[in-house]
Image (tube, rainbow, N blue to C red; front, side, top):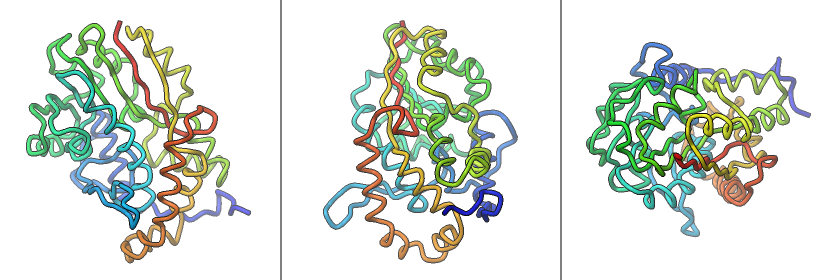
Amino acid sequence: MPTPASRLHFMFDSAVRSATQAKQAAKGSRPATANLGASLPGGQIFLEAEVVHDSDGYELLRTGDTRHSMWRTVEWRLLRTLVPQLNRPLLDLGCGDGGFGSLLTDRIEFGVDGDADAVSQCSRRGYGSAQVADLRQPLPIVDGSIAAAFSNSTLEHVAPLAPAIAAAARTLKPGGRLIATVPTDGLTAAMSGAYGPQFAQRMNDMFGHRNLWPWAKWEELLRSEGFSAVSFRGYLSRPAIAWYSQRSLAPWPQISRRRSEWLWQHDLPDLRRHVEESLRVTAEGETTCVLIDATKG
């Protein structure tokens, strides 16, 4: 039986706290910090990532620890099939240091993020222009000049969110597309099912999650801000998040720091299994995140 959430010992070390603070800073909610950690989904800023292969040649994105690599691999495999096909010019909303976006396509015309240190790294990663901006304010991009925008694990941290969606919509041409990946209320349900609601609340607080919504609420907001067509594809299975949650508890974070290579090899079969399952399962009730594809009317 799972240990009661009130008795769980979380590894809320300085790296995790710094990652949370950094993500909030990037969205304009608190002062920025330069000490960014690797444990926050969506916190790809300054987080080294490399494409690796297992013994069968299966491609994975190794970035941070095994749990984070599992989550990010799923998003990378989804977005790398979509982003290169988008019309140009292309905008990366919440680009961070460009490390993740540069693994999706060779060149991205525009990027915006709230962290100046991160944005300064984008030019060496194929971004034509990357600027510091609060995503909730009008963006420093000419209205109606962008053919498509994408955002990976960013919009769930932005509050209030409606101004950010409106700002993104203003930059898009008529018929322009917004592609976004975000966790949903299914994430909370999966973590609660694994270790209880207090565990889920504490994890979401640590992540800085503000908008964990069902698909219908996302569609309502997007349509209210001028998007005429909205479609959804679920990803990241609930069993995958149960595994992610288990790997967030002692002793796994300590092992990750001290024996990262051993843990990578130990976890590789589970990591791959959850990636494959998370790409195969797409229904809202079976998943914890969603890929949103919205077209401006």
